[in-house]
Every structure is written in structure tokens, then in C-alpha cells.
Image 1 (cartoon, rainbow, N blue to C red):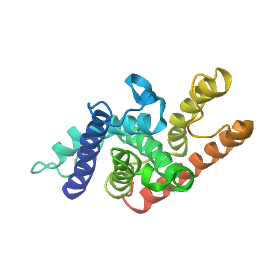
Image 2: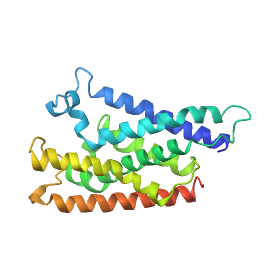
Image 3: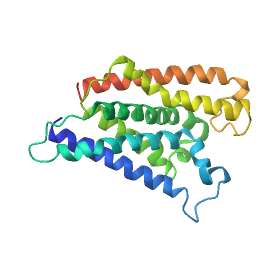
Image 4: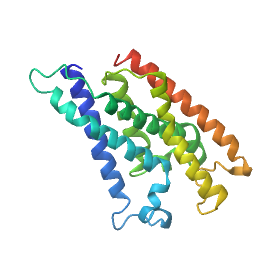
Amino acid sequence: MTKSRHILSGACNLAVVILVIMSIAWFYMPGREADPFLDGIGLFCFFTTDSNVLAALACLALLPTNFKGQKPGMGDTPLPHAAFVFKFVGTAAVTVTFMTVMLFLGPVYGYTAMFKGANLYLHLVCPLLCIVGFCCAEAGTLSFKEMLLGMLPVLVYGIVYFTMVVALGAWKDFYTFNTGGLWYVSLVAMGAATFVFCLALRFLHRKGAGE
């Protein structure tokens, strides 16, 4: 990767790490609007939170190489492949968050609510920063099998959500995925959509950052 790519990648990655930390901290600040479901670890029941934390960890994994690549004579420093794939997985997860908000939750709950407070960063800014960094700056090779790893966060969360909402009834159906008992339709739809998003990210990466 060239020095300019490391600068762009590093700027996006550092911004995501900082914004995710600040956004998570915002929910625990005294004086915010009370919501019992968001108290304590309840915040991490949401895929929005989990996907952004995952993406922030992936961005953090790339930062040492980003900083190294900006030093004189180190502009061709490649990204560690494992960290590059990790960044793709995190980017795929927040892409699901972003697209779900834009295409489903926004029309259901209203875009004002979806982009209010810290949700502006978790639903919009951080996902876009991850997509820009990955697709425009972070060179690497992503095989089809590695691309499928991008579906893991949704698969794991889907299992947890089904267990807690449908099987145990311990969570309210805050994503309305079980409306009318049609959880299996939502399962297929989210799985198919995630696969399409992963394909799109791989395509955009090839056209942008290259291999």
C-alpha cells in the first residue's frame, strides 16, 4: 500500500475507533434520556452496538500498520492478511447495520429517531467510514471463501436473537423480525441480503483499492 492509502485508511480507522468509543460511552452518561432496556449490558443486545464494536476492533487491528506505512520509506508496507480479512468482516457487519436502517428501520421508526444522538455515528458515520476505508484504500486479496466470513456476525447474532426473542421470549422483538410469527422469512431475507452486501463490498474493493 502507498503512503497516501495508509493515510486515508488510518484516518478512517482511527475515526471509527474514537467515534465508537464515544458513542458507547454516551449511552452510559448521567442525565441522558432513560431507557431501561439500554441499561448495563442491555445495550449489547442490539446488532448495531455489536457490529460497530466489531468494526472498531478490526480498525484498531490495522492502525499499527497504517502508522508504520506513513513513515518515510515505508509507504509500500502491506496490510497483514488476517487483519485485512478481519476488517472486511467488520465492514460487512456495519454495512448490514447501515442498510437495515436505510431500507427497513428508517421507514418503520423514522429516520429522525435512527440518526438521533449517538445513533448518527453508529448507524451512519462509522459504517460509511469503514466502507470508504476498505473499498478505497485497503489493498488486499479476498477470496470467495473469505468473503463468506462476512456473514458470520449476522449468523451468530441471528441465532442469539431467535433464542432470546422467539424461543425464550426474554427480549422484546425490537427489530420486528418476528412480526406475525414470520421469523423464518426474516431469517432468509437477512441471510440473502448479507450475502449480497458481502458480494458488493468485494466488488467495490476490487474496483477501488485493488488487490
